Length: 480
Image 1 (cartoon, rainbow, N blue to C red):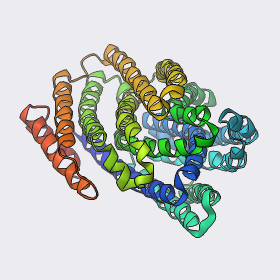
Image 2: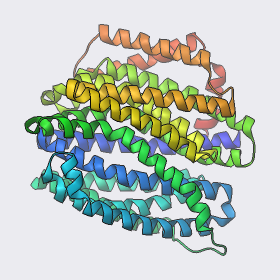
Image 3: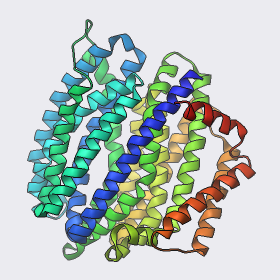
């Protein structure tokens, strides 16, 4: 139970950080979307998505590699963190330089050479954010989720203040990007208040770090392509005179569809060191129980979000971005299912990677990227925004299916089939009720609350949740 309680505390801290991430992210998106307009907001969305692919790839691989080795060998935590920091520093510098020099080629692929200076400017983010993730991985590996969450919260607050502040002062896209870069630098410098890197008494072999880190890195590339390939196709394959505006609408839909990703990301972050530790110790039965409950609770959250958002997409777009973004309504109603499926894929592949098989996640994701690329290439010219949303959602469905089959072959009975069927039925029910009872404005928040209560009642009525879940929740989450 101590493991479960620590997992619960960690999930709460991570959820708090993710909640701040969602609030700060949507506050920034709403202000920028309204202040810049669809055209300039589309440019901002494409530029930040491009650099986000590179930074997140590096951050994910550095954080997970640091966390894995520290969770397995806590006595070597200082040596591991120090060695990984040195390796990532060299790698991030190389990537930042490459990103800077390939900016014209990227702009040409996106059919907009005006993006070159923006892309080059954001290359600074690559080095700062990659280095920052070595510290978050250090805390995650020791299950010091409170410190990790505080570090994340500090960075998010600084980023929101700087980005929004510069834009409101009239510096437009350049101001927003400057705020992004400065926040990353300040966030990195603030890490020294939490932990000072030191070599340790015994060095961690670089080869061992790379054997795990490289497959994680490659899978992170796959993951980020799955997240943003559709947006890049919208930008590249739309008519030049409407490409920026269409990218702005799609960025708005994409941003709102990321809600499930941020919620489940908290669970995945705290699961990783536990699954890594238990599989390293050979405790497969206990690992399977953790995975089963994580899938069940993850599905409960994702199904609710998918049907609640899809059935209120128009009202949610209006309250978030205003009537000028109404073209994002149908794409959002499709993308929210893709976002929920992607979040489940993230949860499942976290299990696969933490159990010591990051290469398998790369191959699973690679198949899905090929499918996503082909579907976008076919559908975007024909259906534009809706085609991109359909392509993304279908490829995410394939991703979840393949990763589920893999986990079942490794851990056997980890999927609560009956509960998943009830959860799906509950989602359909609240979706239907939501469509039949439309609301607008701030009443939308009240509607979500009522739908949530009805959904939970349905799950208890048909035993997708029971008293045992309540006892587990109280033991794990309330005694923090």
